[in-house]
Image 1 (tube, rainbow, N blue to C red):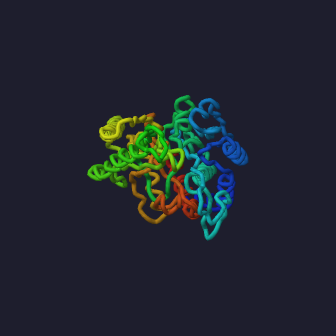
Image 2: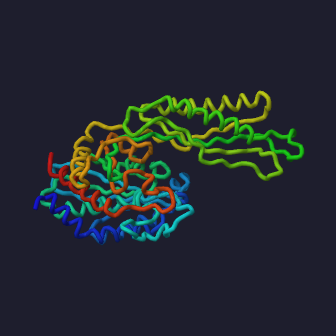
Length: 414
């Protein structure tokens, strides 16, 4: 048997255990918001301890967590040192996830296995890679005498809010500085770039009035409609901008939430909307934000020419920069592609993704990164962020083998 055969055989022999580990993780909710995620970190640490993996518990101070809009947050680092002279490779997956919503045919925290699929919120994104990375690490340690360097497991809980209290917090507090970083992804492609994201809150102020005498008020909703029309018109212009990164097309703007008014018989005096602007890697985030602000203010000013009294407040909620490929990630990317092709029996391409992730924070710190893990060909196929999110267990098995083989290569070569 080759060393790769031995790794594959160990993973096959322990696969039921890996599935049970993932089930236990899915069964502890991590809905974000509200983001009460410290209990999941405690459960994860307990499960890891059963494997002989001691997890450092890095508790983010309560004041920081509350100011960020979350409830509790503990990040985990597991350090597995081997012989001197090799690389330190970190593997990061996030445990926080959006609330389940409606329409489930399986319990969102049941972790039920049906027809080779494990159902539950975060089963595919990205508690699956808590399992992938843990069991890949356990597998390579059966060949420990050949390993040089170290593996770190980073299990964090802030990706849905941007990652600043997850990987960002670990990096700012100098708790880690790996040579390479692999982050949670899907099994049929290696992602080396992704979009950036600007999120903003726009509050339109008018003046409330009784609906029977609307002229005594200033309708904030009508002002908001003028702003919305101007914002959506930008999407026509964005389609004229194309990215050179495979897998990424053009910028896009979405308004995902609108709140306002007090009653049906009252002219609304305030309307709030939240927008999400996806930025391709070639765009400058500072220029993007300045343009959006100008579009909003110009639309409000134009509306106010005939109906004075509208004012606008604009607040940035999130600025996540795009992930750019960094020199030095080639050994990781090459190993994943080579072993992915062998295990899956098909080419595993590199590409970008229109998503944004907290992986960018490692990239901004100068750490070469790649995104790869257990999951389907597309986010849509997994039902991630929708009802009946699920993971095909054979994808979990094979992705674990790919990661284990890649780690073994990287930790046995200079």
